[in-house]
Image 1 (tube, rainbow, N blue to C red):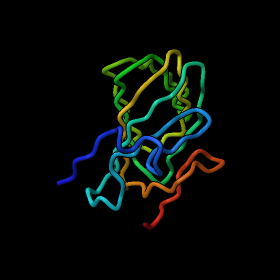
Image 2: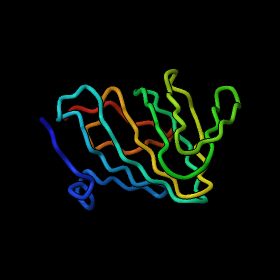
Image 3: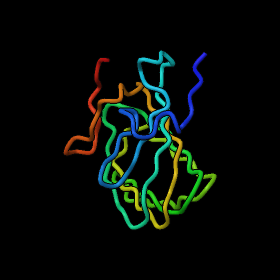
Length: 128
């Protein structure tokens, strides 16, 4: 059984930060669950272009408001607490944050924790 708290992860190597996000990685590949689980926060007024070419991602909003634009078809969807989006087709997308937002994110394959976004917005598939 794995039992972990967010407080244990803050300010460790599982607390990965970029210019527009903080991804607190509760489960990683080495935990052996077959997916990774992240508690991610993004500040108001930011915009992030992403493309998970090598991963599937499901994102559940638990705080704040914003929008996601699917760059593959130019559709934009509003995000608020209770909203879910799933990138089941590896869609290139932009996340725009209107008020501070918090998400629970699941990645398959799981991330190892060492990934950083490439120039195209994607994570590479990494070994432990």
